[in-house]
Length: 432
Ligand code: GLU
Image (tube, rainbow, N blue to C red):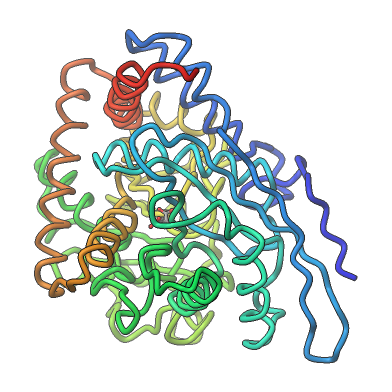
């Protein structure tokens, strides 16, 4: 039997050995309280938003390849659905906890609202190391987990998507398990599927694409030329590699990229297309590097833009004073702790928050959901064009709060999101 503690409040989002402990839920609640204090918003609504609507905890027994049965813990946290069905990813990771799912679900509520998508926020996952599962075990785990949460998901209820440790294939299994049991082919129950079963073109690349678009917009806003901009990116998975390659293509100089083994550093610029992403060849970055530096050192490089695109809680009070970039664009969810966030603000380092920067993922998920419901696929060109339009609109809304109130970009994004959510709560009222 695998020992998985269902409630493990001592595990942080990122490295568990960090001296500064902060769960995703604590960070999310602090950010909410801080943003709400700057906005004339009904305190009763803020109180409601501090708590998730529902948290489903399930056990997922699977037969291992050797015939033994192991039981894993799974969660689906549903935070708020005032603006539409719950929406958010599913994580397969050993650090998944009850509180982490709640915090990440709250971020999804704000992310969907900042992008003005008709969705609420959810997040879930299974406490498991997917690297230790065979393909067959992963499939059995996914199908059984889907069955355990089947009654609480659905195209109009809650729509999962990929996140750390899950991918398009995982979503195809969920879609199949759900459809077989409901006796109805239901592509809209999940997003991030392969295009063959109703997935959208451009979905896989979308979070990285939005990070690149936002980096371009922030450079424009502060009168920096992308051609003269240096970038360091932590993480070379879907978000990091796609952001790196687009920025490289658009003329920026990507000087550092990394994976769990370390970072590749080249002040002259890395040929990002020549280094395989985590999906193309897992953990290969340092194999292709002439000059390897530790991951911690990547974070403090003297570059124009730093993009943390791996785990949460990597910019902490321990290293915030040493961050030398002018701009931090958050590719990962929750890479900056609250204390680090205040230090960066005092030091006049501009932080573009995750709920805006990586929101391309859920935005193209929305496009996918529309395509599924309408049974009509969009071209890659249309997806990318519409993503550009949505990112620009969200950027403009956040920028206008930033300019009007003289606050951080994070607070500005929260204010845009909270105002929309509060308006919907006010209109719907409290039931019963
Ligand atoms: N997991 C992604 C995120 O954190 C995407 C969620 C979705 O597409 O629903 O934004």
